[in-house]
Image 1 (tube, helix red, strand yellow):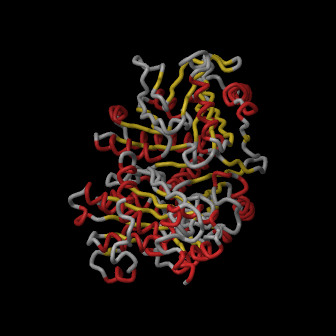
Image 2 (image 1 turned 60 degrees about the vertical axis):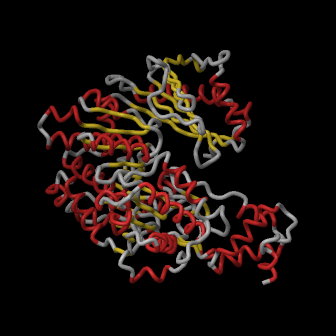
Image 3 (image 1 turned 135 degrees about the horizontal axis):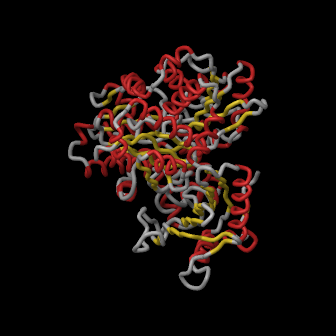
Length: 616
């Protein structure tokens, strides 16, 4: 108790700054989690100012992606108290935005993450968030068990709710957790809601009288258990099954891994909805496990390392296709056994090409009216492959690109749907796919079963996924991509690098060449410049807080350099788009490699800026 007394108003006794003293004192006054209280008291007793500063130095920033941070004590971490504070702010903001919030309510879902040292876990966070809303007599649809992220936006749209909260850190390291918010349109929030919620959090930090009483919600008339949502989701999913008779008879076998996450039961159900025999599950990774014991990173985007156990099982069962979800089942990775015996893991762009082609082909076969094309759309993010643009140009539907992230594609898809348009598909290169617009976000459950139907249908023609991908590139033009990043921990250096590109050839002159490659167009979404527009103003939204420049080259190359919102990285995404008929992939790959080398040498200048390349 001496430590607690030392941390009472008047100072922690650390001799540090008074703001840190005030934050820790306030924390101990408000927190009721014995484990996080003990962590803070111990740090004070030890006089560990460095660790206290890590816990209390800066509050987690609420942005368009909500919150994401390590679980632990203090305002910098995900814990019971920061969940209560965040939810109080969100609740007050929603009350201002929706006069009928008390009639419509919200939905809350959660994954299987847990952090025993601080007592933090997704289920507990979800219950505390529900308690906050229920204490204000606002209806809450709280899932009884772990659920995939896409089921939250589905529920928002399906039940016409005001908002959705998903407690998940997706494929982040095991100590992390997150708080993702969906608006009443069923898409992730975008500005200005992030700023409004952030301000409301700051204005509602002290826990409300009933904030900690989560046991009181179980008998509340405001608590609803949306168990029926699973049934409704799979009924809606059935509308995207185009070849049920093929699925029933197929001899193709699939292996699925949920990478210790939530996906197993849901992908099994999705296969049954399409009349498939459910896929074989990797036994070691089938059940949720917050320790993620079999993988270094629980992210299927990392490729073969995460899929080693899947390949072993597939070799044993003679399965040719592996489907892998990330732990919250909103992303999907796919691998196929080649005739050589090697496993090929498709990139996000390659799978985007396959799924886009498949959904268009299946839709066209069902919809004979050519006039429907003029109201049909596909979307992808600006750093993803332009293959959908090439398919759209040839087939006559519309293609649009948005800023990076599904929040932009989901919101744009909703605008188009509200205008009576038909959005067939949206994807981003980070293995995210929206195959069914009843979920306005990426959805790894629907993508998994739609991919299985594509593979089964192709097998009836004796065609593999790899062969079909090649056929798409032959018909619509090869699109070869390469992406990587450099690490830089100094924001000043990053700013200097991008400012040099803007004043490359004298003030306000962007580069005209990159090595031997001639530049034909420049779009800068930090400043809002686009020399392809008549008024030189970019059409896509701009953001001064992040760096992003896209270069278009006369050889069909497109390269985007951008900063990461969550990591100390400068990323690049390069693609060579060849017209149909130019079908020498070896030559095109060599050309792209040379273009990327020139960009690294002339634009990144890693030696000059002391940048650290991506580790192999």
